[in-house]
Length: 68
Image (cartoon, rainbow, N blue to C red; front, side, top):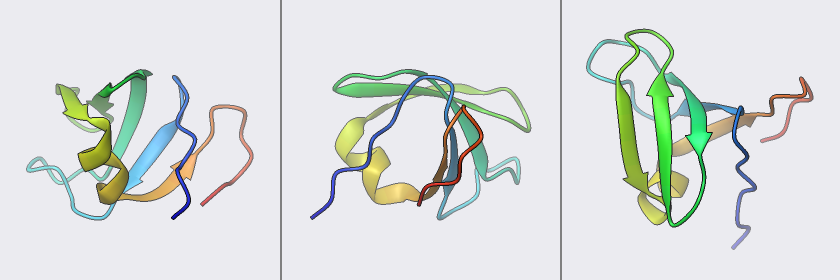
């Protein structure tokens, strides 16, 4: 199993949409819990890293390169 590398500033595309309809989130803080903000509605959430890793469809690094 490959562990995804998540850094602050990265944009995460999730498998399921947020209730507001947005699927893109910006990473604010990384640790055992990851703090993310919905790009559509601005909702701030903290999720356990394990749960978040299972919900990620694609990671878009802050530097602009495209990594899955």
